[in-house]
Image (cartoon, rainbow, N blue to C red; front, side):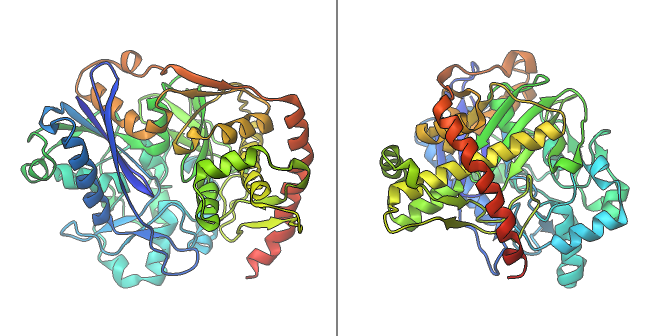
Length: 484
């Protein structure tokens, strides 16, 4: 058996797979975000470890984890986990959806005008490097105590093995990696108040990065010495889970955040389009990615606010009056692609006395779809087109949401079996390769297609008429958000 662990934002997910790649069992443990100020998002790294213990405890009731042959890791990208000389967190981790470092991004761009061509994207507040510059300027005592900086999944590696390490794809999202050469960049470190010595060794995702310690083995029921693969940031690990490793392979990820991801066989930056061009977690591969901060999370937010379960809302929305559907901006935590705007926020426009919950749900679904239209257009500016993407993540369970995205994009969407397993399954596959169970070509294959969503022409015309108003609404409201 092979264990994949994904350190998400809202939960830790654990997946057990056999040598044939069949998912045997899965478990999850919830996480919470702390927001000490508006626009700030943090988590306690030790909460991730406790969630790993909980999820593995659930798996242990189904399969004895002592039989696990190797472990792979995946996790939320961009988080700043700062450790002191004793490898203890200096402060809570600052997450990928934290917007406090806007001014520091501007300073980095001014100090290094070609930064996007080296790092694969223009500096954005959610990236790790601007957070370190923010700490140097705003929490100098904490910054002075830093001896190591790692990423969320790599904190779990440290707890599992006692080893400091990361993979190329997660390193890519820090804004410290020279993407073309796949090494840490001294210049990128210098413009972000970061010492290169703080950064961990960087490996390909299919390489062994350490072995399970006696302490971790006792906590999780594993065997001492079990190899731990380097793994991958969640976007890249999700690609491994669905076999996206060849030039042109594309998929949509619908989790707390959202991505439109395309594999490339070379480094192809286009920072002007606000896409990310990053190293993949397997050798000799990169990817272009449009990254949206909100993904399917607006639907979860709306379910919480309306006090209804998502399946109930989706059923209601099937019969919504589409001529009376308002517009909704889905930017609960700002946005990256295409706006790079940490200040913008969500809102409904066009509510009337006869607008009901079903119409508002439909507006939320439309808005999620329109962010992927923006993503498609940003990739097109970089010379990349998509035609038949797959779809993964927890949001992939919603048929109406996927149909709406297909209609708006005007392309078919393929949902694979076990699509919600996502990065955790990809991490398990990386563990298989690291343990010698097979090559990338043998292990990383596409799952069976469960359903294909085909675009409807009449719906496409409706969306084409609405998306221009959706984009104009952002432009009109942007000055209000910036001055708030």
